[in-house]
Image (cartoon, rainbow, N blue to C red; front, side, top):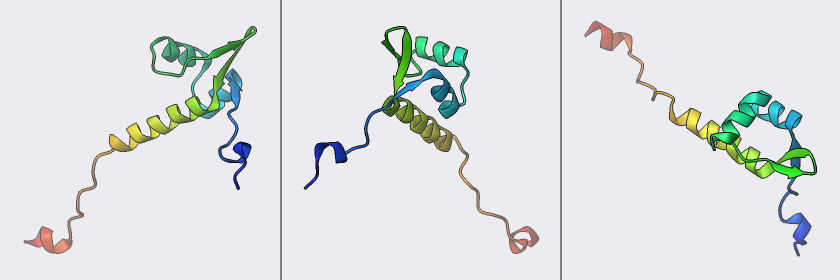
Length: 85
């Protein structure tokens, strides 16, 4: 029988240095994109800003999907027979 704490990984709260490391963005880019609605909003705990790991991971996955969707489709390679014809 599954226990509730075993069914899904625990949600983590990420501080800015880890968010920067995971995303490759700098501090200004994180906050600029956040203010533009293009990056998950932080949660304030006291004076500290943290981001839910599930939201940051979803943002990363979306960027990967967008990148793959924007790649050109592969064309069939031309063979020497096709060139000679």
